[in-house]
Length: 137
Image 1 (cartoon, rainbow, N blue to C red):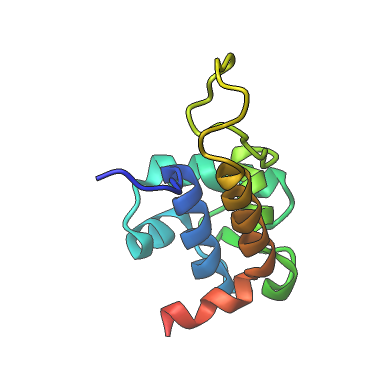
Image 2: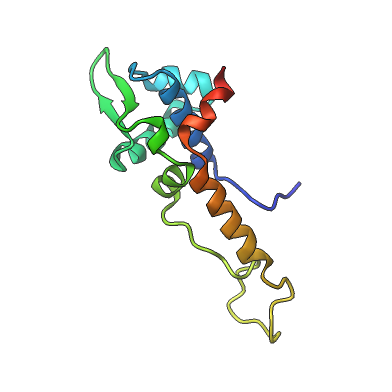
């Protein structure tokens, strides 16, 4: 079944892992622990976490007692921040079919694709990591 809004596996892993890391409140969690909690492969998770480290949302501590922890408070990190760290800047798509050339004078979908994109961006901006912590309790 197709969906209107599709979230990539990488973004899903990023969002879920960030909630888990935030929930542990500065306790270092390693890849194996996070992967087990969110049901992800360690290799995919490692790639995602490195992007989040590069974006300065989490820190990585090497060594046998190492792991990952937040660099910012959960109240300061939005879902849009995480989205853009993984997917790049959000772009508003005018055409749901990604058609370069359209033979119609105006889009048969009207402004719906743009409106949905704008509403999704607003949702991502408004949803903070701290808001999602209740999902683990």
